[in-house]
Image (cartoon, rainbow, N blue to C red; front, side, top):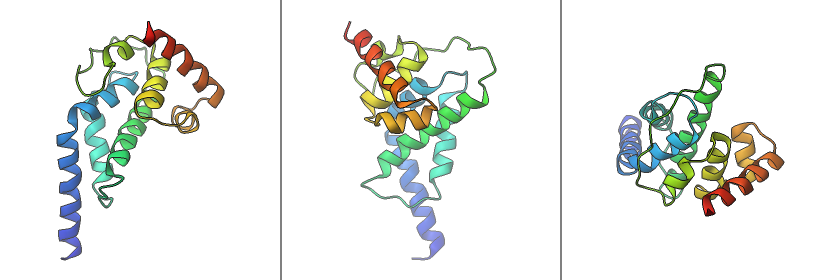
Length: 149
């Protein structure tokens, strides 16, 4: 198999994964975005970023969700000086508890989704969102209390 054929095969594996997991990846983008960027824009950019990387079955899913999260955060940073517009409701399938999480204020929503749903550590979440681990811990506790009620 030539390197060009191998590259095309890898791109196809990423596209297939994104197609099969579209709703879950879209919810991930929606939960982390705090700006009015289309989740589809985030997914397309994440896919383009990953297409050049080799597909590995065991870690492909983790790479995809991390890429979506990182790109959503990057869009948040790019639009940080803009006012926060109202966002449409996210897709209601793919992750349990989405409707409760959706009601949280953005910092709590992003932290709870990353830590509680995607199982990121406090350290990973802090690095991704540009906050301290103590702040992440506190936001997660607040969000967990709200979600329970």
